Amino acid sequence: AKTPVRVAVTGAAGQIAYSLLFRIANGDLLGKDTPVILQLLDLPQALNAVNGVVMEIDDCAFPLLAGVVITDDPEVAFKDADIAILVGARPRSKGMERADLLAANAAIFKVQGAALNKAASRDVKVLVVGNPANTNAYIAMKSAPDLPAKNFTAMLRLDHNRALSQLAAKAGVAVSSLEKLAVWGNHSPTMYADYRATTANGESIKAKINDEAWNRDTFLPTVGKRGAAIIEARGLSSAASAANAAIDHVRDWVLGTNGGWVSMGVPSDGSYGVPEGIIFGVPATCENGEYTVVKGIELDEFSKERFKITLDELLSEAEGVADLLK
Ligand code: NDP
Image 1 (cartoon, rainbow, N blue to C red):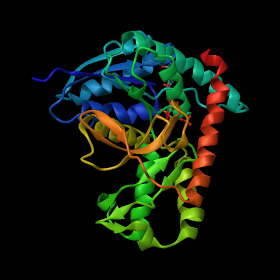
Image 2 (cartoon, protein in one colour; image 1 turned 135 degrees about the vertical axis):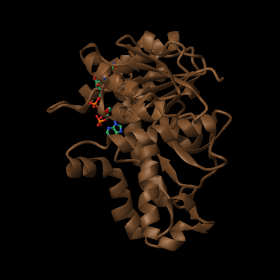
Image 3 (cartoon, helix red, strand yellow; image 1 turned 180 degrees about the vertical axis):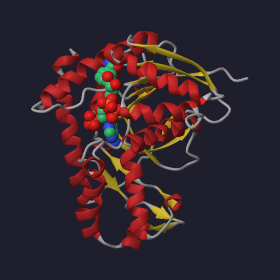
Image 4 (cartoon, rainbow, N blue to C red; image 1 turned 90 degrees about the vertical axis):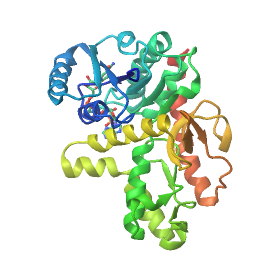
């Protein structure tokens, strides 16, 4: 039998985790032949709720679930973790300034980065979901100097999946036929979903849609503000689709994409003019547990404009936490 894979999840009492944990235990993350151990972290006041979630997980009698750890100590949660999905984050509360939100989260992700540095597998794959996801991943990475920087990623996959579904509907093609979509930048309304290279069954989607006004005035705002639209409609945030995107991101990173492009927030190697280390959404392919950024994509004038907006936002976030990282 295969050795169980240790999957740490933070914010385990939250809404996203309530969708995520059951799917991980069901084998949706790593395949139906890989047992998993869930290592669940939340704040002390949330541990009772985590216990309740674990009662339900027990009641599913998942054949692949080889163990569950419940803790409020990051070093316990991350002990020997092969995968760490960091969902828990401080939400923006009424009257909170952006700087305060950054600072509150910087404190959380500094502690968690240090705990990963100390306790996790040296090959740990880290995905940050909690917002501001890119900057939280950046802080965790900077706080884990003994782990390879490339192990730290942020979730752009929900934006990627949202864009795929909008494109498929507009062009009248199956989502599964779409290839080569890129989502650049920050997981925020400034992200740039770029379908200039996208094909459906080998045919250019841009040529098929042939509507630049739709791209600018409908597609990009719809994808960028989708989270707010779902809160408006549902009264609750888009937790199930966020959990699904987290599964997609990690599964593809571990099991590979077969040459297909996915969008991931990864520390920049300096390509595309993004300063080294900034966690930036890029198209990537995955093979043998490693991602490779797709290089050499030309940016036209419109793309350069969009690229700059999302990069400037990330640079100002990085500047906003610089003092906290000293
Ligand atoms: P959710 O599980 O709904 O969301 C958690 C985080 O994911 C938030 O930062 C949220 O951002 C972000 N997120 C990213 N993409 C999406 C998306 N598409 N839709 C919704 N959210 C998205 O939050 P809950 O409040 O239900 O649960 C959070 C849990 O985390 C709580 O149990 C809390 O105790 C825990 N927590 C744990 C910490 C720790 O372990 N140290 C620290 C802080 C919190 P956004 O805020 O922008 O919606």
